[in-house]
Length: 143
Image 1 (cartoon, one colour):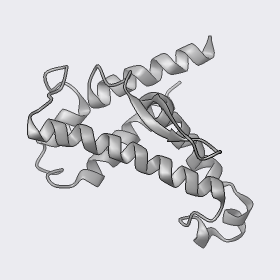
Image 2: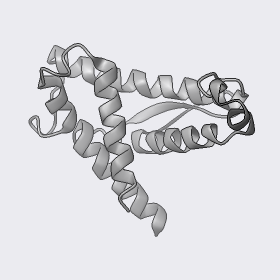
Image 3: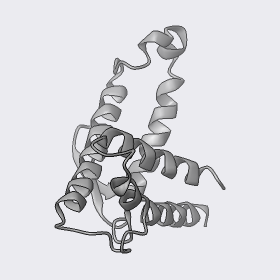
Image 4: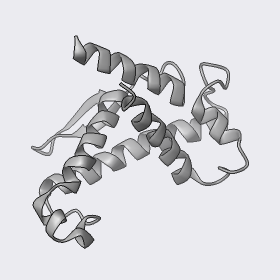
């Protein structure tokens, strides 16, 4: 039951952040054996968050905190590549919205549409992606 609730919550947050219809889309995810697998955007975000926390508590990062930003461990390198897969996915959605090929399923009532139309976020894709990820993280931590 708890897994269903978490999955439902993640879906709702995805729908609010990038629009309905995206929560069922799949993102590339690299497994420990190096193979790519397709997982939902919500699962990808949850795994990226847990991977970031695990990365912070690795013994080498505790002893040498200045190394935290460098992917030294093989799992760090996989996490970094998975972050890139997710970033590519978000970038594709943003490019589609900007080009007009695809609009929000909610007529602009999602966070991404609001950020893309804001003067503060013009030409700053990394800031937009950061806001979407922060929104997801904050939403998942409310239960």
